[in-house]
Image (cartoon, rainbow, N blue to C red):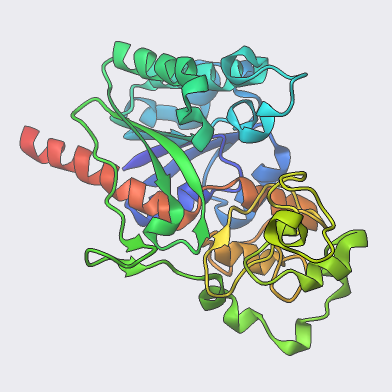
Length: 349
């Protein structure tokens, strides 16, 4: 089944969709660095580089050629800052579709559905898209998709519930011209109830990368001037450990006086918290050995293959991985879409 990838980034969504039976026939992103990453990992896939608001139907058709009328899926996650929790604190910036970038990307995605009418679509974004404060944006997406014939399903999924060693909640909007798509059923659970497997932990996937020989890598120094405090934070905790409310004898910080990820440390007994798009020396999650995670480690936590290659500096590679959909979660979504449109195709035959 043929898929067009929008806002492709380094291709996390697409790696998972390939596992579910889709073949990316065109990828697109505004970041030239992402094109470099695609050239290394998927050199056979045509790549269209540019802001979606500046690209025309003809631009896409020129890359697609004769198959432009035979697209099964359009998949992508419009950039999330306008819908993110952090935007709540940035009173100087507009939110949701009031943000020009937010409008350009969502509108561009919906125009693609109208231009190419794929059998199905997947739109991914941060959990904030499902918040009541952003209801107008979500309703706009649903209304415009339904107006051109799509039956739409929405929901928030936690990557940890699908075998990803990371607690990462994301909003998905799925649509099909042929019938309702059901969100995939979780395969894992925090308590391993109802026949589900237990969540996969950070320790399980990082164990072979976590050796004494590389434990003191100065290039991954964490905590900055608070490094000594980071070393005292128990695995699975954060700066709140040093607050009066938590009973610390010598409080260092006010309760909720910092971002929650400040001095946040992984526990090998738990999944990771969300890997952010920015590599920081004081915002975690950090390794339980009190250092910044390595690229090889965040690839594992995002379920990318070890051999997957990334273009750019360490910070640029981190941003690409942090922005990506975990391939294992993408595969679960892809299988639900594949089953839905495949079933309808068989019934039609």
